[in-house]
Length: 299
Image 1 (cartoon, rainbow, N blue to C red):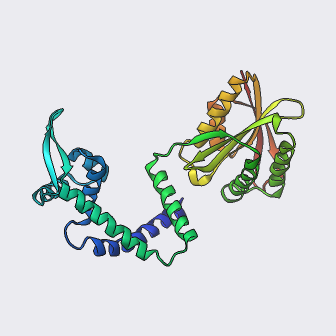
Image 2 (image 1 turned 30 degrees about the vertical axis):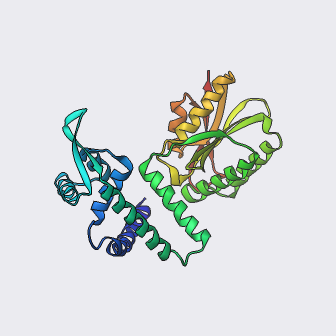
Image 3 (image 1 turned 90 degrees about the horizontal axis):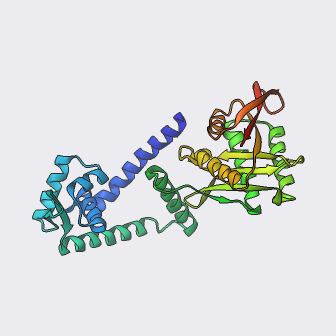
């Protein structure tokens, strides 16, 4: 957590310095960068109110009032009483304001095109995709979706478990062999189960499965969430989708194996009705003292 915060702070300083050059190049005269932000918001959301602009752009009330007054004097926007609520004014760009916004947008596009001209297409695509993903994560507007997995997702499940249980909670090669062997067995007859894949911004971010063991009992397996996307309710959504499938198929009993140190997962299992019925020390997967637990769900 601490290292991640320091990385964010370092990037924030870098971006502030980087954006300072951008601001000086494009906003050295009227309008200022903040005035341009107000104009851009109105261009895409007009008519609007000062309250909406303040909430969306985070300006101080007094600061925004001064900007709106200046923009009105410059004939960039107009104010009219809101007919539905006469306590507020509706704000709208004039034709001059719209033209000024479009002119700034063209300048900005040209400036950035020049600045990134030395980057190849692959690098520029990576930057754009990473920034888009960061925006969606911070805004929390993108929805997590869950779909049924296919053979093409088996490699992803193996890779996700390798990353989670090497970088987040370290288990040795015996554990990883156990996961890979079980996945290999499942791929020989995928009719004996179902895989669910969570996606965020068109990227796979988590998985859970329900498979039949050799005794034809149902086992919940391979439940994992990409650490980069934790905090979005992905685990909850995956388990909800799996339990809906269980009800739809009228399955009456499921078991799973987990370990006592996976506290987040255990809490989620309990929330959908699983109960711990067995605990056994495990000395194979780690040098730490861990207990392997069997949990059971019954209709």
